[in-house]
Amino acid sequence: MRNSRGPLVLVDFDGTITQNDVGALLFDTFSKKESKKIVSLWLKGEISSKECLAKECELIKITKSELKKFALSQKIDEKFGDFVDLCKREKLKLVILSDGLDFYIKLILEKFGLEKLPFYSNILTFEGKKLKPEFPYFDRGCGNCGNCKRYHLKNLRGRKQKVVYIGDGLSDKCVAREADFVFAKNDLRKFCMSENIKHYPFRNFGDVIRIFQKSVLNLSPLVPLPTNVEKGR
Ligand SMILES: [Mg+2]
Ligand SMILES: [Zn+2]
Image 1 (tube, rainbow, N blue to C red):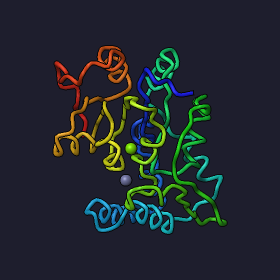
Image 2: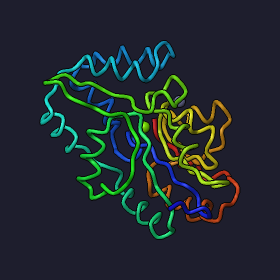
Image 3: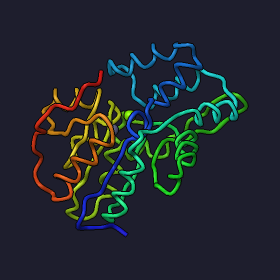
Image 4: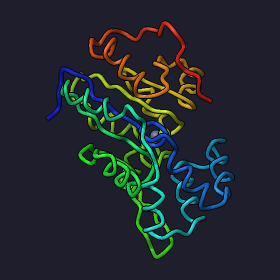
């Protein structure tokens, strides 16, 4: 059931919940960095994120068990579990939105006992050692994202419900414009600064928890932080 009083909490997966950008690292590692050329086309806006992911999948050959081993070697933000507990206590719905692939997301959530968290992402199927991505939400999105997070925000938000979005990258661009409270690090932070989108900079979920308790849970307007916590790349 939706909690119409408290905000809906949407969280990116790669590089936000996980310490690494698991998708990027996967393709970098198994394509021996060939994927960087494809990603640079996406960053320049020459191909969509859907095309980018589809092309990256074509680049590599990997078995299911190799990919499983890779996924299970990944770590999550040390305070993310505490943040999940905070949301539970406050009866806030937390949903993970990812333009990555369900296969590794599911494994990593399970590994850390977080398999009950709902998530929406692209889907990975295997044909032997070939990766075949599927994009079940593409048609409902902006036409650029494989899985446009803005669509899910609109679909999940209750009437007049505020939305919190926490993310780190360029696949969060569409949703960052719509959310009421944006927590941003790395590329998303740069994007928010260049587009004048109000946001809380953060390094990790320890920061998110502190800011949440101070501001978001009181639904107070976005206020700049007293100190600049962002020291990332
Ligand atoms: Mg990310
Ligand atoms: Zn989009």
